[in-house]
Length: 181
Image (cartoon, rainbow, N blue to C red):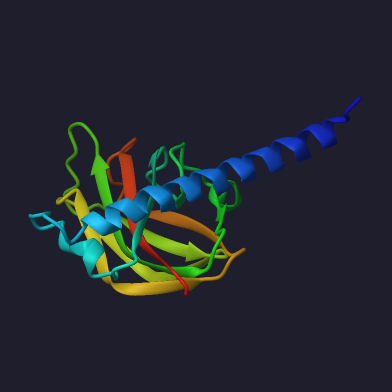
């Protein structure tokens, strides 16, 4: 017989392994995207991945942000945002550099006016310099900043509202990940 504490611990371990499997899948898929990034793409968004380096892969996630008054956290895989950062954090399975944070917001009837969302890559619960702010344009990238991770560090993305932007936006984020040699 398993106790409630054992059941909770088992669920946590399964959840962490699910996140690790998702990250590995995204890195593998991103390897193919990284190869094709400089081969035949066109348009304003094509250069972001190639500026990260030849070995760049794509990582990312998506969520619906429920709270437009306080900070929400997003993880590496699709799922709801959370006001609890620990529930959104993913363990990095390998060392490398994250850069080129790109965010797309989708929400019907969005009228941001002066309201914005600021998205920040967080390492071990601390904000990095990889940050981008989105308002009227609904798509934005930070192509100039990087943050290094070592295997075992935890990653999350914070979404900070300013002036109560639209509620319940669907958010997709991607970033370049270059593994350490």
